[in-house]
Image 1 (cartoon, one colour):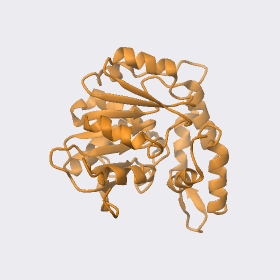
Image 2: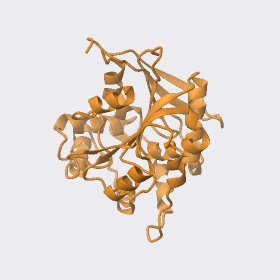
Image 3: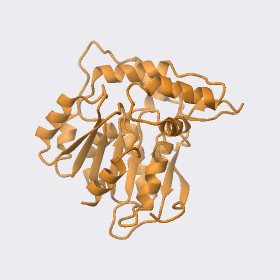
Image 4: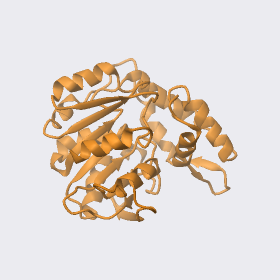
Length: 293
């Protein structure tokens, strides 16, 4: 691996409704190789991918440029005054708008959780914008227990007095479902989810109004599925990762995905839950090998 970090820069572009969106660009464009677009989870942001982006951009054999997007209301993107716009259709349009504004016609995609739902929407809207696709602990069918756990977790988000408290909460909240992670991993998770507040205390780096998007879900009724949209990915090379302890993506759903997509590559990530940290263990090597095949 080359010494030093790949160059990084922030790009800001207006969405279709004028809201300012942010993307983190890591590394240089590589002739003959598609850039890799990273799409984060519901409340997450580009920092979730900081380590992995550097690994991709600095790969000595097949380096890739990386674009890590902040959805509206997350990270460095502006918050939307209309919280109802925090939906996958609007966010899929934001993805297309940002790529067009950056002059990027096609990307390979690594999508975590919410990002994977956006991929399904894109498969119906503009499948040609995507090359290979990695779905990180998400599929066309969502486990109700996993979604309920996300809603509960959002409602219990702490207001830590300092970074030590924030990290302690992260360990308490996730250690049981992520026994494979080390202290350094939890430190990175903490620094990705929280930012320095105006008073120096860590604050969650997303619009609190995102909680509203989960409050109206009736968990007594069947959750909607995206199997027709998943069928739109049959022409793409697709890998699905499932955290061994995930409640959001079940083994049964992965098996149904195999049947619906005969070329699907599936891998269970040991010792991790929802959603696996992609820079941990042998996942970077697996991802690079899949995308470069």
